[in-house]
Length: 233
Image (tube, rainbow, N blue to C red; front, top):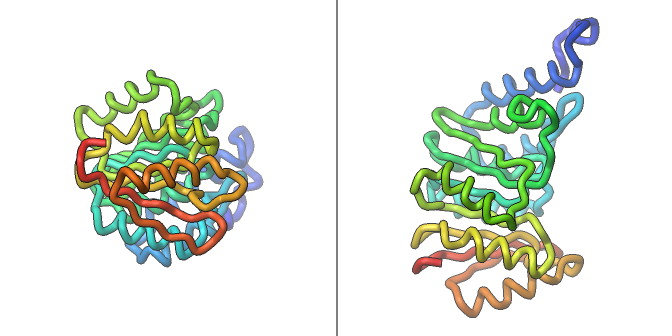
């Protein structure tokens, strides 16, 4: 993203912070777009000091996005946000009154909610959407779960995306802590189910396929698995 002419001459205001403000304005002005266009935008959109590029394989993430859009989730919880690429995609697919919550160990810095990172990612919101960033948080800490429950105010989760800790024990812990929050009929997705670098996820996925109604899309060395919660998880 090219900054307005003369920005570099500003004094007393960090250039990267001003760039984040203009990035947020650019996001706010985005029209509705197809999943393909949203993915293309997320991959190329950048500004001095930041970007939101998602890392998932094209066929796999578009397959998942199709399911998310069909679900029209009003509550989305993401464990593992990184630069915010998938959070952006969920904001495009979810209704304009949805609550989207990101949980990650990434620190926001001394400005917290008003940090450059948070300023841009909260700018993903469309219409009356609300984006909450639980950062930095340990997703395995029960106090994080309770903090999330507070944000949900009793509402169940419609879509849970798990892409945080890639060890077997870590991803299993995330599943055990957060899947009970997903409503019957809701969906849970796990990334990297086919990864040889993080075989623990594949191990857990094999166990889950025996206990849940599952689908998967494996078009690369990563893979995405989808669970439809038929009963309380």
